[in-house]
Image 1 (cartoon, one colour):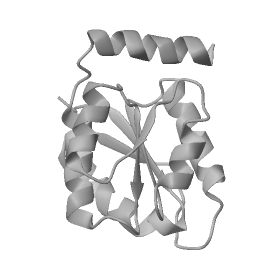
Image 2 (cartoon, helix red, strand yellow):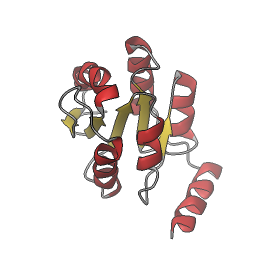
Image 3 (cartoon, helix red, strand yellow):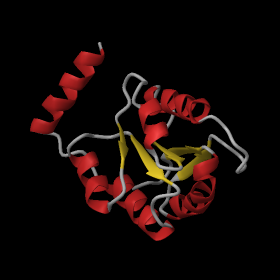
Length: 149
């Protein structure tokens, strides 16, 4: 299912270690991963990382995008400023499933200093494999898009 689908991933210094662990895992799931930075644990400003990946996802250059910072909060705030992005900060598998089923999230934010590696992998796997449920949820997503104007 994930074959040939590109997933962008980016982080700030607080999410670097988790990003490096997740990239090969995502590839094992059958997705092509594209690293959009940062490239070390040297301090960077998370908006400089989050805005470009969110813009690329919004333009349709990627199937989905994943952003990681220390808590996931900063990158999720930034990503959600970009029109067309529905970025969900998830720290558990149930939220990852429901944000795809109900919110059709196209970006996932993770806290590299908050959740462990194995939990992060399960969240990513669930989020990437869960489809949007549509139906009444589609009407709600349309209202968000209309508000964004």
